[in-house]
Image (cartoon, rainbow, N blue to C red; front, top):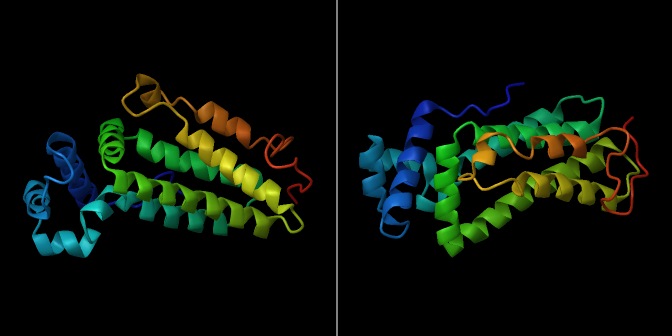
Length: 198
């Protein structure tokens, strides 16, 4: 399984053009027409691919979530490690293009509606991990499942901001790896793990 989702160059180019405009002149001041022109696509193509200005900001999250669904649908010897590795795939995707990540970070922080959508998007990752653990480990205490899902997601989101050089250096990967240790998968999360990988 590839560590990056199948994002086409054309798709990425439109995202990059949009985020660059949002970063330089503001989200509200940027029109779809300006984005389409900067990306070299028609207005109708933009709407067909993304739907709207807010959708383009989070477009790769949809691809990432589908990639993780496919990944977690595969057999895994250790479900805790599978969740950890799924989170690392997301981190590596964003760390691969620090400038794009920086621009998205800046834009989202400036627009309350985008910040709210980001919170909902983060919860979708957490829910995906939670539901996977409950299905993969029958009898697992739900508190342990949601606790570990929240832990892994929080570690991913607590890495330095994309503008910070530590982001480019991969800060947070070591912590995320440690979160999936098979010897103590959710110790400290929830009420303590009683379920074990089968």
